[in-house]
Image (cartoon, one colour):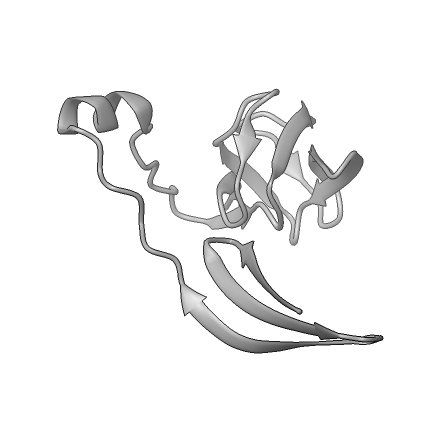
Length: 122
């Protein structure tokens, strides 16, 4: 049997045989038609430029359930910055290095996608 599976806006054609599965073809998914400019501007927040420093990105899509730091706070490598819930599991997002929190890009309850900027540390 052949199935079409969509992961992160990319389609994979997967062929499944008895006790074995393999990807047979990968195709890009066409973007949905653009909405009217006024509607698109209202529905999509403006991109936020990261201040000088290292932006910590969401490793997976999910919901922010807790934010442990504020802008201006000193953090140590490994310190928990925020908690991201994905697939009913809470994932602690930690500081990759010592520094100062330059900006927190998300709020508690926000939905994030893979690669979204969460916190910037300088």
